Image (cartoon, rainbow, N blue to C red; front, side):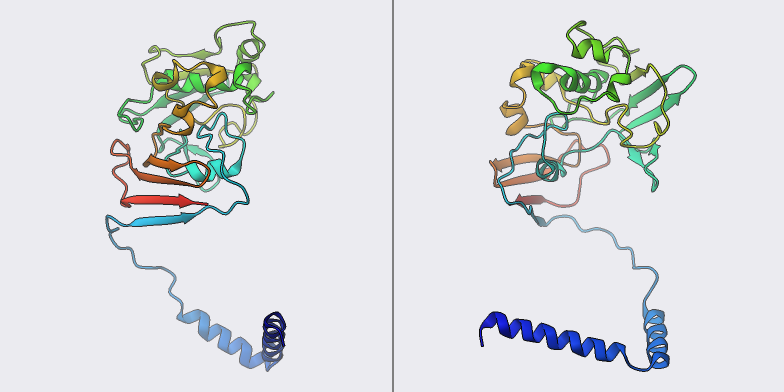
Length: 275
């Protein structure tokens, strides 16, 4: 009998055995189930996390990852999986995905004024030590809406922001509906909308972007060259818990703690993500 047939037979016999067991006395089954459940603890003990150690993370994919480490430009979920260790959104959410003010930036919606005010917290820094600024938030919209980047993130929902459509069509060199009250190096951005929509307080609503881009680092790269730039593919900056230490293109990435991480230094010494 071949190995495959043996395994199949074992699987069949196991299935029959389980079925016969399940067909036993209902009263005994119910009693045993109740007794088993009562033995499980409702809570697990909380202990102080230890520092150090390496996490080896498997990336399940049939193809090498493309390595476009940009929320605005990546087109595959695999790239998102690979960069998750450094990538962090501007907002935290509760269990219902409602945006809270506990994340890297605070959020305030004013339906009467048709605005959303975003303010990055002081101390939220890129992995090179630079503070995340208002311009970093605006620059993300410029990348998405500029046709030279060929970004697939531009949508009619985002075009509800005043001036974004005009910028996308090349009719304006700036996005009029993005206001920076304290200047580009400030931390506050006010988004002006044509209409306010239901669900704007929920993460993923699609009417505004929830990430920032390091303008100081990428400003010298032409929009058409961003996707292929080493600053995106080889040496990206993030403000999340880890920074990219090294990469074998398409195969693996090695991440180490971002010492500037605003929530504190993460515990793991290294993360190796490998296809």
